[in-house]
Amino acid sequence: MNIKKAEFVDRVRIFVKAGDGGSGCVSFRREKYVPKGGPDGGDGGDGGFVFLRANPSLSTLIEFVNKRKFFAENGKHGMGKKMKGRNGRDLYIDVPVGTVVRDVTTGEIIADLDEPGKVVCVARGGKGGRGNAHFSTSTRQVPLIAERGEKGEARWLELELKILADVGLVGYPNVGKSSLIARISNAKPKIANYPFTTLVPNLGVVKYGDFSFVVADIPGLIEGASKGVGLGNVFLRHVERCFVIVHMLDVSGFEREDPARDYFIIREEMERYSPFLLKKPEIVVANKIDLLDKEKLPQKIKELESAIGKEVIPISAVTGEGVNLLLDRVASIIQKEKIEKEERKEKEHVIRKPAPVWRRLPERFQIEVVKEKDGCWIVDGEGLRVWVERFDLNQRDARLQILQVLEKNGLERKLKEAGVKEGDVVRIGNFEFEYKE
Ligand SMILES: Nc1nc2c(ncn2[C@@H]2O[C@H](COP(=O)(O)OP(=O)(O)OP(=O)(O)O)[C@@H](O)[C@H]2O)c(=O)[nH]1
Ligand SMILES: [Mg+2]
Image (cartoon, rainbow, N blue to C red; front, side, top):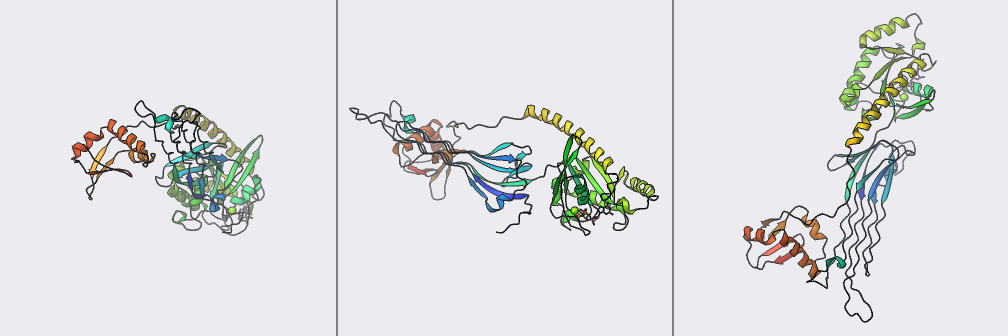
């Protein structure tokens, strides 16, 4: 696929798979003059984890268009002399700051990588299997059993980039949004006298005294944007996290007849996208005042203010008139909101739970027995099948071990209750045996 550099990719699906654990080893000590040494099979190494990491040098998800599948390394198998297999290397996948990570199957948000360097684990590696050195008991001194490594987690993720700008610029097409960002920031967007000049969001950094902030200029919105008219409303996701929205109207009278009506239409489209957007601080600006008669301007602004019930700041993105006042307002709102956000974060911090760590699960199961159509009996329970998979069923001792553990969990009693008779076939995952009293 041929993709242009300028393309802005803000939503992708990727597949991640953590490494499988290595298998444990069956081995016995061999020494001179010691014909039968004890078991010394080492454990398998753990599989590598998969992490996502917010990297400030990336700005889109475009890299994931060509590469969608990611695998961490498997753990190596255990070896004799109690040698543990090497752990699989963890895999770090870099994503732009502002990436929201969702599980595709459940739709659940796994993480919001909204700060540079923030890291989240998205797939845990499988634990290595135990070698036979772990399985000797007083009655089983020659254990021919070792566990297999556990499978690493795998899942499909949806990555969605929500730009982290402090200010979001919204308004009809051609009102002068890109002209404003070009004037106040380092951004060099395309500016032209026709609607939908801007097709992807532009970001610009504004230096304001010793303070700086980021402005996002998004494609223009029109009536019906929430239903897909024009370029649709999907770009509104990039103003979802802004501290303040700058809503721009064209008051020159040459293009937009009724700026107050425009204002309400855009607000309605924003509400359809997310009612939350309307709760954000908002500054309304009236652009292109250089095209108006100086005498008519105050009257025009007053009318607009009473029609929308809000203060309006008159500016000209071309001459720069009024722009400083606008920046004053914007900067003071951002500073105030940033302080509040920090305070909220401190509160959240206290209740944030520590990340879960891998733990060997206790071998305890709620056993259920059901009869299949073919006359077999199926034994199941939460986590039971996964546990059985870790054993190599060709190993006689492994089969004994499974039965011993299940016996402790009341297998015999459950089978009897269910009505299993001598000679019936019982199945546990792939493991099948004939029942004997
Ligand atoms: N006279 C005058 N013209 C302006 C002003 N601001 C923008 N324009 C002109 O209006 C036209 C549209 O400007 P843009 O900045 O591309 O508008 P936009 O809102 O980004 O438009 P879209 O990207 O299509 O949504 C251009 O021809 C600009 O030169 C202004 O303050 N005064
Ligand atoms: Mg534009």
